[in-house]
Length: 114
Length: 116
Image (cartoon, rainbow over all chains, first blue to last red):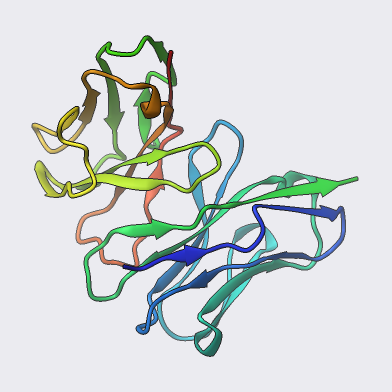
């Protein structure tokens, strides 16, 4: 079965510093890949997704992610963190050949320090 | 356009009591999902509907959980009887017609259930 690993359950960065949230998936066939953000007491909101084409994907709020097939990774980055980026981030995959169901990673909580 | 609506937002019950959650998806979205999100974890799919048909309920604990989407619009998820381990956030999501595996799921704010 497909699985998603997010290294680091909690990441802290200073305001203005680089944000790097890691995501690895376990599949011999590259799935569709997604990053969602969840603010406190809210539902999940899509940041970006990779389906086909360019491996560097740009999303909302200045985030981007790069699909690396050789590393089975889809890490999320942002050049300069803002206080408003503090939230929980989830990587998710959807298998290309087996329906529409998503498998979510365990999440990474991002804290932004002043 | 209104987003996915869920009610109640919070529910506290004692174990062995029944509980129900309601979800109204985005207008025109025919695919509806129920997820359970335990504390500190990612959402886990419970059931997926295409219109009124449950096309994947393999992860739904059928001994105590049930769901319905009678008219292919809003949906209800029920737990009877609730157990302590059911404490979690229950999320509803929807996606548009003809949704492919690449399509975005739109999530509601969730219902936080606490079982005492």
